[in-house]
Length: 229
Image (cartoon, rainbow, N blue to C red; front, side, top):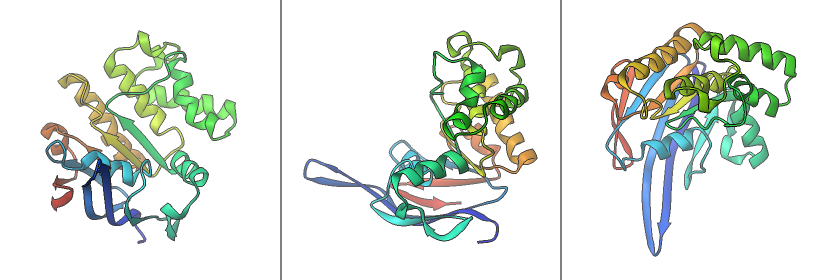
């Protein structure tokens, strides 16, 4: 597991609807290693987003294990909710189709938020956030609120926020789904630059073949299973 950041073993996720038990993820095992840049594709209902939520510890599986490289013998699901929340904050970055920026705060304040929640020094957080906003090309928009930014700009702020605490792994769920082709390209360019220059492993769920084609590795899901890679 030397180069493996996150290892999933036999992840299963079932939901109950009335008297019916619906299996959405069916025994998926997956290693995500340093430098990986992975796309997961598949039709709607294949289980892609649910799998991403399991890998990001946002949902708990019905069964299965998840290990992180710093404590390779600790199944993350055995942690308390508070410890799991701290793990996410410190080690994982997330970008979703909807940016989830806080409308009452500026771009700078939104990017700083993970550091402030994590109890980091505010002066360090501001310096780091300004560097990231510059990195995503929005230095001139640092004090603007989300409502004053375009959709592409909002998503770039969300990317800056996702790497505020220097995560080892960035998880993205349809992060270009609301963007036109030009802004989609800019966002993927940023993701690839983070992967190449900062060593952040990337796992994206996408319907966009153009986005997937730019990743190093493409996995296909069908009926809750990874069927090709």
